[in-house]
Image (cartoon, helix red, strand yellow):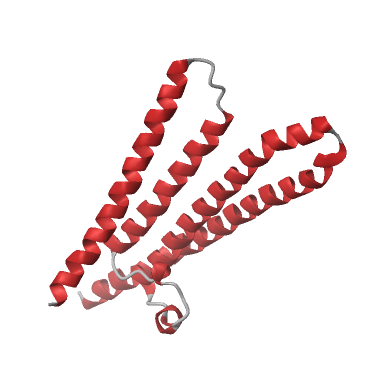
Length: 178
C-alpha cells in the first residue's frame, strides 16, 4: 500500500510536461506579439513615402498593435498558468518567494489564486479582442453602433465587478486581522 501511495504522490511530476508546454506557449505568443510590433515599425518608416502609404499605415497600425497586445496578454495567461502549475504540484519557487523586487503576481499558493489571476488576464484578453474587432468593423447602420455601445457597457460592468470583488477581498482580509 505504501508503494502505491508513493507512486501516486510522485505522479504529480507529470504536470511538469504541462508546465513546459505552457511556458513554451507563452514564448510563442510573446514572439508573435513582438513580430507584430516589428512589422508596424518597418511599415512606419515607409509610411511617409506617399500620402496613400500614410493612410494605409494609419488604417493597419492600430489593428496590428492591438493584436500585439492581445498576443502579449495571452502569453501572460500561459506564463501564469505554467508557473502556477509548477508551484501547486511540484515545488514552491524559492527565488520568487525571497526576491523583494519581484512582483507577487506570479506567486501562487492555491488553486483559487491561480484561477483568479488567470480569470483577470482572460477578461483583459476579451476586452482587447473586442477592441480589435470594434476598430475593424464597418458601422453602416445605426443598430451596429448600438451593439457597440452595449458591448462597451458590458465590458465596463465586467471591469467594475472584477475591481469590486478584488477590493472586497482586501477589505475582508483586513477585517480578519483585527
